[in-house]
Length: 196
View 1 (cartoon, one colour):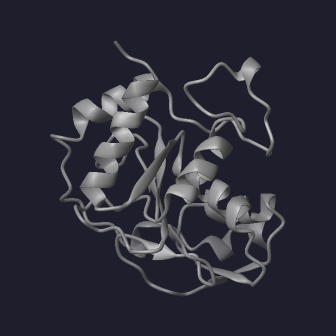
View 2 (cartoon, one colour):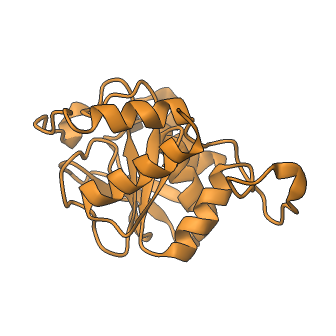
C-alpha cells in the first residue's frame, strides 16, 4: 500500500545512497533550496554561479535576500556561497553528501533519478530534519491528523507525495548515475533581461 511510509522509506534510501545523516523529501529542488534559505536565514551576500538553473536566483529574489552572480565554474554541484546550502540538483553519485551541508537534490524528468517531479534536502542533524520536515509539510507533523495539532511555525506546501516516493523506491535501484553535468550545461543568466 502506498502511503506516508513510502515517503519515510524513500528518505532513508536517499540518506543511505548519499551517505547523509538525514533526508527530507520535497516536491522540487527549488523548494528544497527555499526551505533551507528560510530555515537558515542567511544575512551575508549570497553568491551563485552565473550559469545555473533560473529558479535559484528567482528564489533568492522571492526571499528578499542579498545576492549576486559570480563566474565560478562547477561540476555536479555548487555551494550558495556564504551558506552551507549546496545545489546538488544534478548530483546523483553514491556517498557524495558533504558533511554539515544542506544538499538539495532534484528528481525532475531530465535528471538521472527521473521521477517527473520531486526533490530532497540532505541534512546533518535530527533537529534539522524535524524542522525542515514540518516546514515542507505546511508546518504539520506527519503521521498525525492535523486537526489534532497546534501548528507553531510557518509551513509551506512543498512535501513529496507518497506516489512520487514510491516511484523513487522502485527507480533508485536502476537509475543511471553516469551523466556528468557542469556549469557549461546552463546559459549565462546575467545576459537575460530579467536580471538587468
